[in-house]
Length: 124
View 1 (cartoon, rainbow, N blue to C red):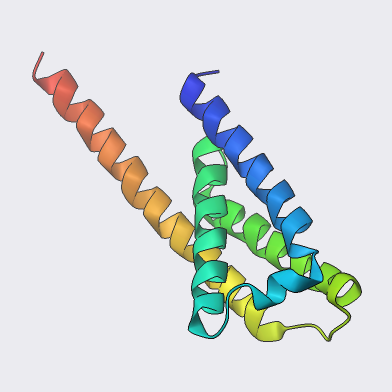
View 2 (cartoon, one colour; view 1 turned 135 degrees about the vertical axis):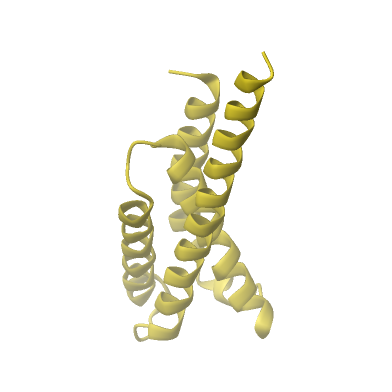
């Protein structure tokens, strides 16, 4: 297994662990007020999705996005217990959008990597 794949797999796993650990603290919900709350959700799930896609490259991008969206829903469900509030549907939607953005970026990066590899082989 290449270093890059190992790096992204490790990053994805650690990001999900951090998400559930830090996200379970009741004060976390107040750390990012207003629109920053949405930006943090969107970017967190985009990065997790991208790292998972880079780490497990044989999985189709759509399947990876579904896995990350499911992680987002499970995370929102765990907040019911840890934060003592109702399910936040809007957060689950933003998490899913973040997962899709991460997959879109992944697809662009994969295409760029493939094009770069093809052009370097042609120049030989």
